[in-house]
Image (tube, rainbow, N blue to C red):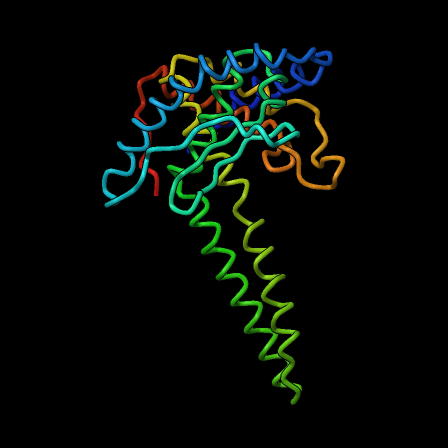
Length: 246
């Protein structure tokens, strides 16, 4: 991770405050949003695949061929990385694209999701959740057994609580790593990551009307994220190469 302190933190605060003073955006038409995606997606896909292949060259069989498309069933503003069985998949909703102010913003959102693939964040998150679940589950089992009354339900509850704790502990680190990778992919695709990252800095609710996490709930906006983008862009300008992804 680049050093995002000092001058980058100060500039991030300024940009963060500026983004939060922006007036409400007039949404793009569906046709303009589709055209924006058509312009941006192929360039980000090519850059993302190139970075993925380079940074995962030592991982036999790692699949960098992402299925990148618009999620036409999603009515909310969102973008995400997942696996469809073993196929790496990135989806972005049309409402989110309609809410963007520039091609740079769409590029950065998509590039950020490529960062989750390259960083193997789903796999790592699952491992951490399992480790946390097992630890709490074992402790619950020991506690109830010590009391002379083994309670299987207590162990099951413990497993659930442990899984949640393991998931939350590393979420910020993964988001920042994806921002770092996404910044480099965005630049490689020919877009401005600093302009793109402003999309994350907007004052938006973290939950939807249905109570689910919104895009800003799963991608928490804060100054550190913007500072990380600025620091990474400074490294690119200084021709400092990317550190290996663990």
